[in-house]
Length: 108
Image (tube, rainbow, N blue to C red):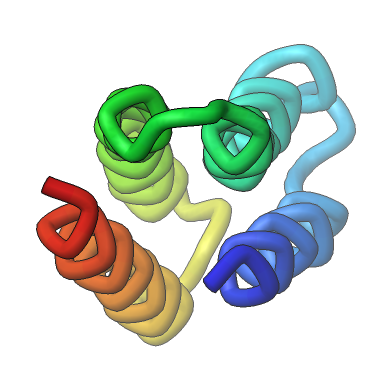
């Protein structure tokens, strides 16, 4: 499961490398930071002893997913990414969310 999250994070880095230089401390920084927190929270949850603790970290990892979605929408609104990129990244992100949610339901 974690490899999909790391791959998505890598893809966000590649996407944001094409953003305008003046966004280096704006959307680029935000998107990169929040995308890193998704696999990081999952990894931290894996280190927990109980399924309940792991489940809590999976729920925490969902928050950054929706932050990424919002920031991708804003990136599209500002003309930094194409509609195709927006659709592809959002589709991948929703797949990640679904995967985490389904896995989390097995931990209960």
